[in-house]
Image 1: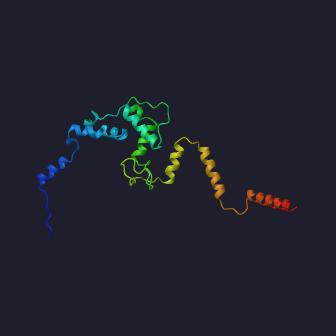
Image 2 (image 1 turned 135 degrees about the horizontal axis):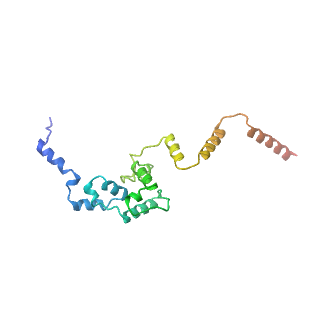
Image 3 (image 1 turned 180 degrees about the horizontal axis):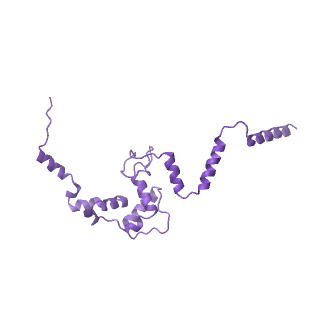
Length: 186
């Protein structure tokens, strides 16, 4: 039989306390935060008062994040009033929606050869939640597409996909085809 080695209680408590991020030196914290993109830095900044005091989320980080999104052909804030001054003003409007979509892995590409997971940096996103059709439809309705356009599109799709044997359109096409064939014979 194999012996299982286990730590005594004080040793186990000592090991778990070493795994705390806050116990690392501030130099390590600064090094870690210097490699974060804007959404991650902002999340870390608001996770703890200690990190709030020194995590940088300034102008250069915001611009770098927007350039990275353009480079990856992702959506960027479309309004010309994108204020870069403070985090509160910057995260209004479409930026908050973009950050929410990123958190929910909606921008990740799980296809082979795609972008992969943009949040965790993996080649395949395992955390992407697939939307059901009702949520997608509701998102489009809220995005500002006029309701009449959606209704007309659905009605046209229903007409095209409806199984009918005789319709006014097919009757006219048959009459035109027969008339064209008789003209060609003469």
